[in-house]
Amino acid sequence: MYATVSRSVFTSRFWSRGLARIRESKLSTLAKKTPTEVDTAVAAEIAGIAACKTPSKEAEVGPRLQIVRVYRWNPETPKVKPYMQQFSVDLNKCGTMVLDVLTFIKAQHDPTLSFRKSCREGICGCCGMNINGVNTLACITKVKESLQPLVIYPLPHAYVIRDLIPDMEQFLGQFHKIDPYLKRPGEDDFLGMRQILQSPRDRSKLDGLYECIMCACCTFSCPPYWWLGDKYLGPAVLLQAYRWVIDSRDMAHEERLAKLRDFYSVYRCHTIFNCTKTCPKGLNPGKAIAQLKRLLAGLTKKEKPDIETALPNPCQSEQQYLSRKE
Image (cartoon, rainbow, N blue to C red; front, side, top):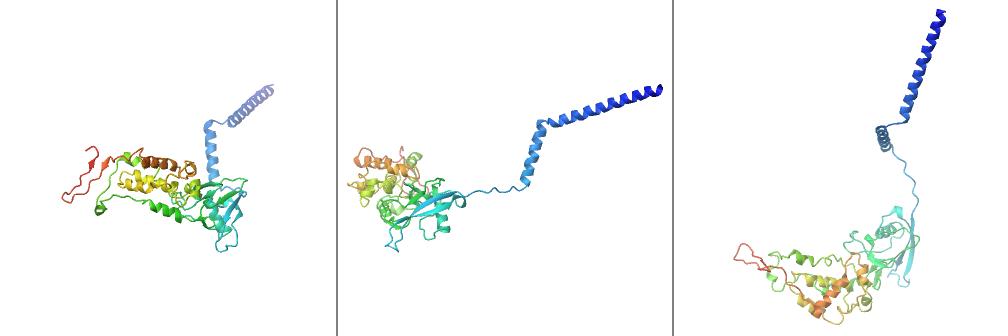
């Protein structure tokens, strides 16, 4: 009887211990199945490190084909009329700007394509052309992938030297006529001997004028310039003319206005504002021309400078600069 009792006690203890172990294992598995936020963050960090260390396979990118139509004309073959040449360009293999597309076409498709370029940053104004009907700079015009072709012409109503290169001789000659430099009559003997001072208020009058890069996009979008380009100076040149007239350091504004006081130079502007719409630098040549008209008509006058730079006195070691109030 003792054996049966001890055996039953032993089995009961055995089963109790086994059940306890089973319960502990179940609790541990439940704890593992519900990790804390710290464990989740640690696991994510480990996964991120592993992903950085293991090189990822580059996904295959399909070609992004864009049709580009470019104006072509070669003076060496005068019997061949101007025509539009079509190219299919993969945008994944070139830059994002129109100038990058033209450079890619010249390098990969047709090396005879001619166009101007220099800075590639919208500063020099060399790459002015007509892109999808708008005069702008090719280096700052982004190519948008589209089913419609990208159409590129030279600047309109200009003599074409070759392909996308317009003749700028007349335009630059008109710019030379307005004397685009500082003029101070009677001070030729003192050039380079002192600084010509200018107040912040006078300097602010040049904002929106000095930024012009003479790309001629506004000039060749002006209908009056198309009709009378040999007499009418055009928006870009008149913007520069007003820039030198209004400069407080310039003392020849009356002489400058006298050169513009004729029937064609300024007054052929009909305020169509094509120039303002197409300017790639966001300037307003139409406003500058309106201010020139006011000065020519006598409605406004140029203000006296806030600071007048005195001539250097050789008898004194230090220069004395008198302000307008003094």
